[in-house]
Amino acid sequence: MLYIIGLGNPGEEYKNTRHNAGFLAVDAFAEKIGADEWKQDKKKKAEIVFGAVGKKKLALVKPQTFMNRSGSSVSAFVKDKKAAEKMVVVHDDLDIPLGKFKISFGKSSGGHRGVESVIKAVKTKNFVRVRIGISPTAPSGKIKKPPPTKVVEEFIVKDFKPAEAETFKKAVKKICEAFEVISTEGREKAMNRFN
Image 1 (cartoon, helix red, strand yellow):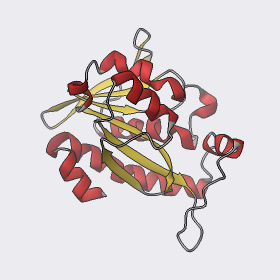
Image 2 (spheres, one colour):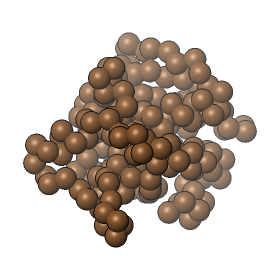
Image 3 (cartoon, helix red, strand yellow):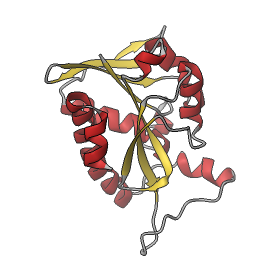
Image 4 (tube, one colour):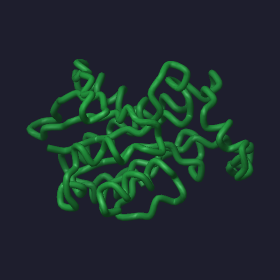
């Protein structure tokens, strides 16, 4: 079983925000593979749906804790370091421009508190991460990242502007393809193809 875990914040007010990029990508993938029976698992503090790509069984998970406490939900599904290697954590990333994404394995949290929480809870950083870009760019292509103050917190919980939402949607299509490759051919192939 491969766990694909989207990070985000529960609640209507956060639904289409940049910080919920992980939720949005996992929702799109669930739709693509026809896994639309999301169930609330109160004990594990998550919404979960089961599906498959080819013969590979998948569990798509959206923790219903707030972002910074994602680990408490993730550790209810992923019990040890070996299981963590069969986990994909999907989240927003300010260091990547909107419309782009990166697949990595065994990297530090990079200051992302949701990922930090997961690393602490599963006691390893050896899992796949799909880091989704949410930062706007200047016409030159340079990232226009907000300064590291309260502004960042305000920025990440804002909805995408209409043009940004379109760019994000296109990226999510590619991310869904990457999920399929990770599921059927493994992380190395996916990293080679999409990074």
